[in-house]
Length: 411
Ligand code: ADP
Ligand code: ASP
Ligand code: MG
Image (cartoon, rainbow, N blue to C red):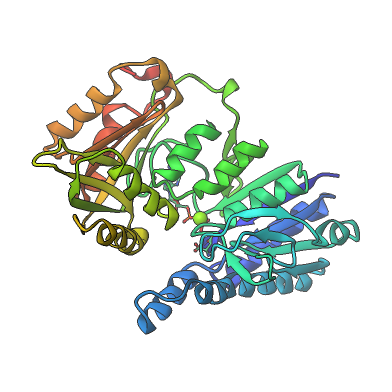
């Protein structure tokens, strides 16, 4: 008997027919003699609708109240999925994140899992029940509901798989694996059979929303191997695991993040510690800064440009404004939304020329690069958001990612 954790995302449970189909899939796994824990998301569109409702009442709703509101979406799905299983004669019980023992810090809307303790999942499994757990949510030390950031049901599933020492963790979604690029943007994208934690983490944090990046970080930390696969068919999916056994390619995939905003700080004193203080106040406000450019100082002042997730732009502006007030100089402004397009691959560690190849492809299509950032296994460029999809296609073509790795000519 194996213990299997399955996660079904929003589109997989979007209406009653889909919930019935998911219940059938769970039944098959259960009747094969497995213990099954199922994590479900809110039905697709529900979380977005709840956010829009709150924002219609207040431009920046209180974060604790947002958690009270958003956690409702998953709660609806756990009950419906459990009821659907009962109608098939399968013993099942639902648990909220808090009831499942998902204990988090107190940072509402972006809480981190601290521990999984005190829930009764194993007892329920041992008594023969399927347990349906609300994804995306936990409880803080006061027992108040918190949420784990957008896409957070992936994290709930991986964390439960780690805590329960599951034999298998399956992430069911609306595509049958992780592709070389978003298959909705690049029709010739190829499904990857395997991808390393590191590459998946980069792809996820650079905008491939198929997995939430924190969930991949967690999987890497606790070495939870998982499979991304479709809830619409039985095709084998993509296995995400440690790097050692992977085929050696230079570029594994292309990611695109259209949810980035450029922030500019003008007339910052050009002296040691100024940039440190700006980024310290951003860190204190829990803003993740990505690409950073500081120009050469002139007349005792310098300009600093950086990108932040668009949802954090308001918080970033407030935090920096406070700091600039304290030091009595400088101006901060939220500039345009941009797209960040990136290539990712562990093979880049030992290959040169990837940046030149990528930049040439963009240049030949007349796409201007505004900012660049690199790490060992990725190169990212910030470009005008209107060119985002075209840039992804052009780069995907340039690296021949539509072909099998053995048939690619240059990389
Ligand atoms: P779920 O609701 O199941 O959590 P998501 O909408 O969060 O599903 O993620 C699945 C979507 O991720 C796909 O529909 C696809 O458009 C998108 N996606 C982006 N990049 C990739 C990629 N490289 N491979 C597969 N899907 C991707
Ligand atoms: N319902 C949440 C969201 O839309 C969590 C998830 O789907 O994973 O972000
Ligand atoms: Mg998702």
